[in-house]
Structure formats: structure tokens, C-alpha cells
Image (cartoon, rainbow, N blue to C red; front, side, top):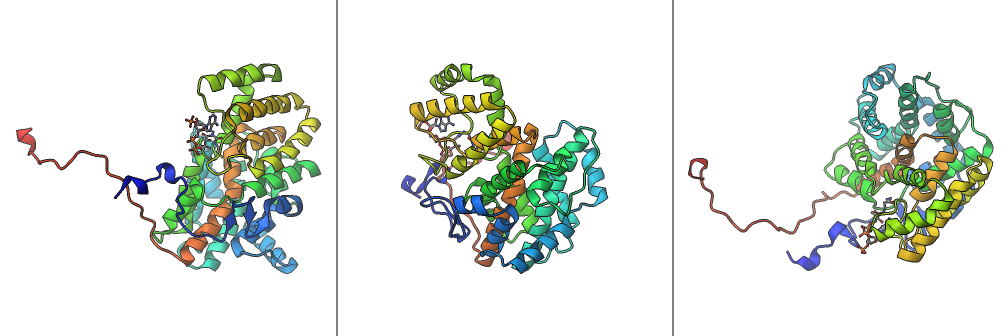
Length: 372
Ligand SMILES: CC(C)(COP(=O)(O)OP(=O)(O)OC[C@H]1O[C@@H](n2cnc3c(N)ncnc32)[C@H](O)[C@@H]1OP(=O)(O)O)[C@@H](O)C(=O)NCCC(=O)NCCS
């Protein structure tokens, strides 16, 4: 083993083949540009695309949505179980436990085939937002709201959490955010899901492990830290001095930098447009101005572009969503991408088992405990 073969953080290492998405020359899901999908498509159509590898016909989409609507409920025993989890437990930890528990109720848990994995994923897509909303409302002592079969996925996410059916701009902003969060090549959580699948484990185990990887602030958990940071700054007048001081202290500015995107994250650019529109409608222009100042200084001083967390944290805030929901909502969308990778890994599997470079002591002579 040579040190040349070692790349800290696996940076630049090609660790697998995939037909799910590409980040070369802009982000594409199954060959479709993210700009086109964000402008024209819906989250559930994108989920179909990721899972089946092609866009659906009208009939295929209707069938897919019918299965989703039928699956949009969770067992009362599970809702009761959620209510027993202490309130200090984070929403992501509850989601991880909740998804694991959903597996126990899945009629196809041990069935191994692409069709069974797609059926399980549609159930996960339908049930995860219910879990998230149920836990959130339970923690606030509010009555739970069942999904409305007559409104779309994005609208239902907002409806089940807030109790209000969203107006068109809010629904579209949520839909676009879900589309942009649905998939992103071999990021940490997707790689985790593929490693689990490579041992011939099941899709629930892969998704539960992926949720654990997503939770960290260097991955999905970053969106919550972004809003905390913006709130700490207070107003746009303080933004410039705050960010210059933070950079001078070598502090990380949450929502900036990316392992792959070194000049621009195309997803951040798309979502920023919705942030601007929603900020105006919700009288949050000061927060947008604060964000603009920070973006300008971080680019100028460090050459770092904002990543998806930078606009998504503001967007969710303008949509009236509480901070603790941000990362769970990332998971609600990313499950489509995780599942597409799980199915792809299963179809052409080889156990993922890399090596490490040994840095421990040289060979030691074992001395029995009495002689030490
Ligand atoms: C996303 C992230 C983990 C990528 O990390 P990475 O590819 O391993 O890059 P590194 O951590 O090696 O950083 C490379 C350099 O950029 C700097 N840098 C990276 N992100 C930074 C940030 N957000 N703020 C300030 N400096 C940053 C590092 O300090 C380092 O500088 P140095 O070479 O002078 O030491 C990193 O950019 C980060 O921590 N961002 C903030 C958290 C965040 O937004 N997470 C959501 C990710 S989608």
C-alpha cells in the first residue's frame, strides 16, 4: 500500500459507476438538466424518473401517484410510539428511528427485486412526510393532519406541517426545493446507502444509515446551521463586519463551499430566485440583504460559492417552517435518490470494501497481563 493511493476524504476517487445523475457540466438527473426539471417538472415525476430511469407517460404517472396516495398513511401504533419518544430528541433522530420502524410494517420487507424496491420506495416517499409532520405537531401539542389526496406531494408536505393548504408560489417553491434535493451523485449519504446495499442488506437498512449520514452539519445538517447563523447576525447592517471577522478567525461559514462545485452550485442559483420572490411576499427583505452581503464577501475573500443549504434554509424559513424540520425535509426528498442508487447497486453488485493506510505501532510482542 503506497501513500499515493490514499486520498483523504476519498476526494477525486471514482468509487463506482452510476447512471442516476451526473455533475459534469451542470447537474443532470438521468440525462435531464436540473434547470429544465426545476422549471417544468414536479417532485413526484422526478422521483419516477430517478427510480425507473425514464420520464413516465401520463398513464404510468397516474399509476405511480395512485400507489403513493394509497400508501399515504402510517399505522396508529407507530404514531403512538413516536409520541413516547422524549421531546428533547432531535427530529432527525426521530426520523431515523421512525423509518426503521416503518420497515417492520412493510409487507415486502424481505422481497429482493427492483420492483419490490420501487414499491417500498413509493411507500417511504408517502410515509416519511407523515412521520415528519406527525412528530412535529405532536411536539407542539397540535392535532395531526392527514394528507389531502387532492393536492400534490409538495403541497401536502406544507399542509400536514402547518395545517394550511399553500398558495401557488409556496407550493411551487417547495416542489422545486424537493426536486433540487432529490439526488446528487455519490455524496456521503448516498455512498453510505450503497455500502450498506453492497453487503446484500435491505433498502430500509440502507435508508436508515443514509439518514444518519445526512444528519451531520457537513452534509444535510448544514441547512439548520445556516439559519442559526443568519439569525445570530441579526440584520444586514451587521453582515459585513460579522463575516469578515468570522473569516479572519478561520471560522467556517455554513452554507458555503462544496467538495465538487468550486465556482457555482447550480441548485443554489435556482433556489435563490424563489427566495427573492418569497422574501418579498413575506417581508423578509432584510434577511435576503444579509444573505447577499455574506455571499459577496465570502466569494470575494475565499472564492467559495454558496451551496444548496444557503438558499434552502431561507426558503424554508419564509415558508414558515421551523428550523428542526429543515434536514428531515432534505431526507424526504433525497430518499428518491438513495433508492435509485440502492436499486442500481443491487443490480450490479460488488461488496464495497476499500483499504486503509496503516499508521499504528510496528509489530509488538504480546506480554501476558501479569507480566505488564
Ligand atoms: C462542504 C464542505 C464540507 C466541503 O469540504 P471539503 O471539500 O472537504 O473542503 P475542505 O474542508 O478541505 O476546505 C477547503 C478549504 O476551503 C475552506 N472552506 C471550505 N468551506 C468553507 C466555509 N464554509 N467557510 C470558510 N472556509 C471554508 C477550508 O477552510 C479550507 O481552507 P484551507 O485550504 O485554507 O484550509 C465544506 O465546504 C464546509 O464545511 N462547508 C460548510 C458546511 C456546509 O455548508 N455544509 C453543507 C454542504 S452541502
